[in-house]
Image (cartoon, rainbow, N blue to C red; front, side, top):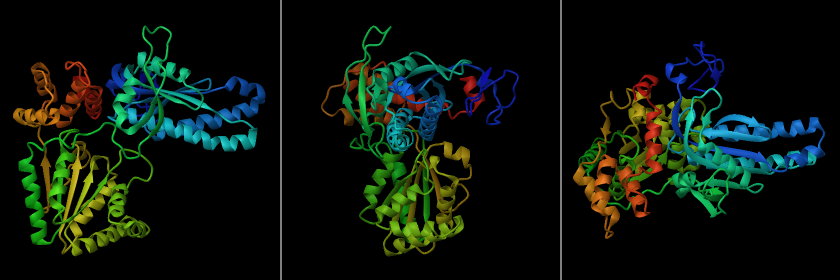
Length: 476
């Protein structure tokens, strides 16, 4: 048996195509691999007592509504629902593809699941006189995937199940690694350690109360010194001056892997331009409903022009929307030079990329800079992006040099002494990636072993590996 890499449906060994989604089954889908994933278990508390009160048909209808609600919530956040075990649901975030925010996605899904169950209870109480209370456990760790029996196998799965069993009705318990990976975005309370059968030590747990809207999984140190990007900063300055002189839109796309410093560079550019231009920022979201024009929504809200965007989106098809958005942008850029910063366009819907290209090609007689930030995946999906337009430039961010990394480490640690072996370890492991430097410095400051790579870095690297082709992963 082999699992499809696209939908993870198990297929017979001699199958060439997946019976569920039709994707071609590759050789790599027939092997077991290790992954760091986040596992979520949810279970209905008091289901036995509820079963005694309801007749079998009513119980079946209630549980069908519950499973339907659970599946929708979990899949909306990128989870793969493996199975329903009695009244329990198990979902894995990171199968078939690992994302660097899987822990945060699972936490969001858990919160949304509880909110959805609360809304479902209104209908269930009216129709059947019952309400559901769901316990949830979430844990992150290394597992084996691609096995015939199940999506994920490993201790991380067992711990997630133990956390769910220890949770009170309507409570969400998080494992320590899940908390570490998403802690800056989570609102939690301490919870009593969970004594689990077969575990030498109790499981450290936290009670999840909520997720901060729009927050990053882990805190970024934008107070750190700006090092090593003088050339790129100078080029963007020069392109902005050209936009002012020519009164024409200029598009700059900064490309680089996660953590290489794209956002830090954009913030520095924004700080320098604010005295001469209105700077408005928007960010593409990795998943969700109605996110096509989300960056434009953030930009128009910042410009106090949300009504204008709503009018533009009501203009009709894409062509009419593009024209309406462009005219709204032109009106502001004629009043004062304008800089639009769009982050994470590797997640953008094709329609949004078309809109950015429309602004680049058709905006006239205005002083406008459009600065986009992207991972290299953008060029895999859109190879011609920015390459065949005279008013568009691509800037690739390379890793920092060793002396620049040293300056960054000094800026992050301040007056705190850092042992020579820890400093050398950071220089070696970070490989010029500023985010990796931040996370390694933070881990050492918290007393972690300098030889251990933090989970945040492992998640970023794993998500990059999962974007490779099956052939490239086979080589690795």
